[in-house]
Image (cartoon, rainbow, N blue to C red; front, side, top):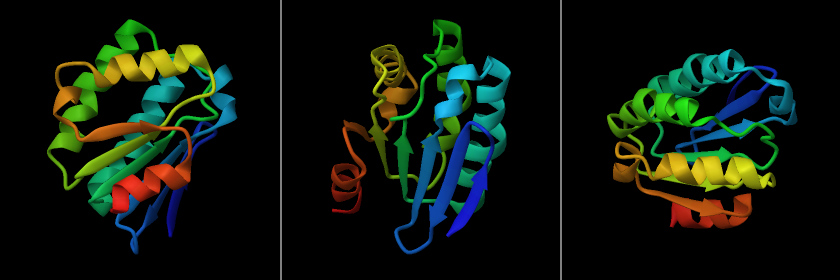
Length: 134
């Protein structure tokens, strides 16, 4: 497994599952928008481009920083097109335990560009993997 990380995100690629696992870390509660944007661009999106996964599992359980509407718009405009134009077929999102983060994530996935993604929300990794790989 190939692993990349910052203080705020850990990204692992499983060649066997053709899946990129991104896990937002507890330290996100102290993250600035620059920290989050850098994690998206330099770690997550670079790993998508490099490994060309079929599946993404985005684990937000420990994420403790909701995105502002402007940040949500930036993410939608800058990451969704890269994912849409990649080899990704399905995206599973493990929802945050923080209700505000969960609402922000759900709102982002309703944005115009994101509507074209094949994604589903889950409470745990096992159910997410069952959906992704079957």
